[in-house]
Length: 511
View 1 (cartoon, rainbow, N blue to C red):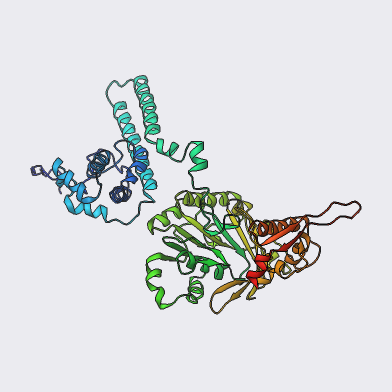
View 2: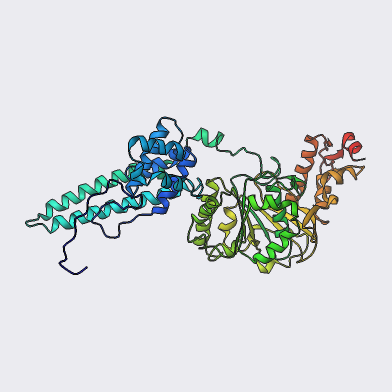
């Protein structure tokens, strides 16, 4: 328009579009409309989300007036214990005369149809609050500039006003951010008794847990030893396609998100061994696969893992593999950053299975030799933050490998000699190393040292091996599958070790 051209007066419109921005003199005011939409939509899907995001948002956090009006309507419905679905919400907005001003029925239902899920609403609320804080700071800065440009401005008076505003802003930010400071704090009793720490294992039993809820499981091994084969069996068990893996129960999952970052075509080929036409409905509905690299590494974006789970409504994430999820595995600070990403997802109720590699120098270790945590590739903080670490040893392509439980939530599982069926994608336990079977095949019974020598493949067992075997035998006694004959003390190498025998009931059952 040419300079000086008069503007034609326009009559005010009684209806404000939902896309209209608030009047402001601020250029480039910080806001995130997508985050605002996501929070409002999540609150319509679940009223419980309102209690979660309200202390995070505080007052007047939404940038768009339409969104602030809808938020007030949600709060009103929730206070009266009424539904927060879009039908109930549009009725309230219409009674208040606000429905057209927020964009009408169409816009309210559009918000409700967003599929970000409710799991990420808290994080999205933090984004909204952060933008609102920045807008308030920007507005304060603009007022300061305007006052400083007034004729006869008093620097001391302006400084005092700025300091008072900053104190008030700090107090307001702390008050509205109390969710950030308090939402993960709980009293000691509820932490111990009500946090789910005593929940059933995701894989295994209470006394021999491979994968505990709220703790990540890491599968470690050299390429070709069957980590993926084993992981896929656990995934299919989580999807309800089988009840056990390695003869241990696996709890079902709602939806699994598989991050196929390392050679996705090979992952698909390996998984196809276990997929049949009858699995189509389950795999389409309950398994989501992300192919290739993530948008960012988890050490750079610690919220990405939790956001991915929320976006795909998954309660289980499989990371294949860790080296593709982090910038580098050997830097301690980046390992801690990855652990923060892991913990944020776990804190949100997402279970994590991680596939990882061992150090190359230990790839050719003798068969049967027990590995250690320092043989896991990368910073020690990678394994320090994991709840359980299962290490697979063997030669690449060898169907017979050994599983070592290096980090345990409860009692140690194994070592287990297992056999992979590479054609069918299944893994079975070698029964010859089952303590119960070994005891049945020993008419004269076994001492803890005898069993330890068998389990380690011969030789002189170490004290830890003997103690582990003793725990195996004690569990058999507790379950009624074995009896115990206490030994007798003696001097100078004399005495008799405690000996264990298969119970008559167990022998009958096996026979």
